[in-house]
Length: 520
Image (cartoon, rainbow, N blue to C red; front, side, top):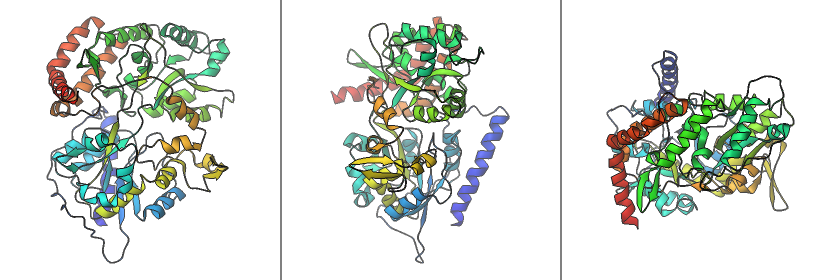
């Protein structure tokens, strides 16, 4: 186990170095940093083997952090239940969620790996497969029947991370509707306002939230809108039929996605469309009016949450689980606080929507040099079973929840452990979210109601995407944030489009259109 201890020591050292770099002003929080070149271990043999010896049960290590959930207490009951159900002992290497991707890249550049890695970036498994450090899971499919039969692991989803017949990662898959636009309903009530349904009505509410003391504290200290980078305006972009997302929740100022839209049968990057310029124009005007938190582009998820719980702003958008957790914290000091998910506002042409989550969000890989490939396969398979999904999402049966008259009801222990109870949900899942009557289930059901705007290039990858995506994402994010805040004129939009296309956007567009045409 000496090598495993070295991994943990390295992670701690890297976490310190990242903190020091940031404190010194040299770290930019860019989650797109490419891994360093290195000498890699040889690819594992094609035939499954288990090298555990001396009768000692192996312990697999998993590099993973669950955003939005606190780490559980040591030797907790859910951990024990998963080990019992899977028959595999495990432990997490869990660095702080801030800059998780950078820390992961640094750890992988060391040449000393855990057994399983949960990636944040969709493209990372392809990058590290090129370096030969990911295990082909195909020979272990006999140990993973539940993975293969999982309802969201469709042929296209599994095929996304299948390279030349090798399964380099298991996809994190889910339904496409996962986001909510959330408003302080008690603020609306305090000011005698109705839920806004159009952009014009939303503007009026925003003005009131800024100028009419919605929290009643007698202070001029509230903004209408806050968020995480360009993620903050999901519902506004959606009102124009375009979408940006998806912020890295710990470094939102340096990340967004490039989505494509079918325009007359051809895929076009949404960031280049005139509708995108219209949305940016509205946001520039609202920012100039003081309706938007000026720190939206630089704050982390933790600060975003803290501000909401301090009643610093009234409108946000986030993953479905965000809203009920914030309401719990708010009600500790404001018992009448009410956080409500509402339909995204309708835009000038009658369009509304939030982003659609891609079919494959990211991937989980087993490292090629693992000593315990069979244990890794068994663990991953258990996490796709009904028991594994229920346990990892909602805790232990008869402790955190009970089955009564056909209903799954939570207990007092669930409420006590709620802040960390979803820590173990390594894979996304729908079934437990609808089944258990938790305080979060209404929020999850709400997210299924809203119209979503899809990336018409979802599932299409290309060499150009892998080559240019990171730089283009940074370029888009920096340019659009500068346009919103007035540092760059919107008259520069056409110039932005030219630069975007010349910097790899055209090559990326050409390649996805070639695949898109072949699928018709």
